[in-house]
Length: 305
Ligand code: AMP
Image 1 (cartoon, rainbow, N blue to C red):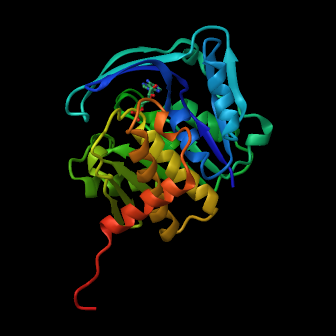
Image 2 (spheres, rainbow, N blue to C red; image 1 turned 90 degrees about the vertical axis):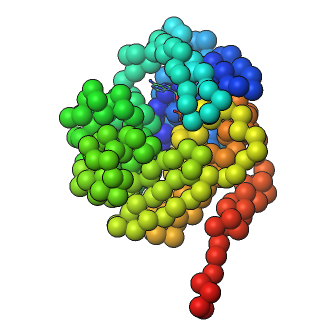
């Protein structure tokens, strides 16, 4: 089954303690869409300017991504600059130029309107709601990513869209802020009452926690020796997670757990290089091998059985 991905597409300039990359492709829809394209057909909705490299558009097409929902507008693409500290969990945003993204109004081509799986990347909640309003059929699964900016500035609109969302992907501080609750277990319960029945709390180098129906599933982060650039790890996680679920076509406890591990697998690849360097051309064998490493890393038996 296919996956609809909505979010930013643009050019990033990123500095880490290990180097700098200037005007490389980035944005939530790109990280998510490319990761998901390893599993399923992706339909992309977003906007870029005329400066967006044609070769990258060709690369998305090569990956089988449907770009009928991608607008190319006169002007410059969204661009973002960030600098990471030695502790890669800390980063400063150096600039955010919205450019053509400032007036972005998602418009779903008619053929996108019955897509069963939907990922609403981190954009204004009123735009996320607009996407859902344009759907002709109720999707099988809708997931949403958001951040402190929207939690603080547009809580009402965020509340409205959350009522129609199945999976919320946030980091731990965002979960606490959204629920106004310091304890994550209690925060998850409150978020559950806002709409999403599945909450995924991303904890960077400490992995990801899924809370669903009062049950918990923990995935560690892959222990990497060389983390090069953490940009896009969360969106890439979302791509592996949603892409796999769309491929499976079924949302069960088992497929959700597998999806969290595929999300973690893709996130562990993307941080190994700047931009999408590491996930442009992954072999199926590399993906399976890392998935298996996650299995090995977390498997244990009960000594009394
Ligand atoms: P993450 O590391 O998961 O927070 O994602 C980083 C990506 O988000 C980068 O590729 C940026 O281009 C994109 N980004 C940064 N700020 C914004 C924003 N205000 N709206 C949309 N996308 C953004």
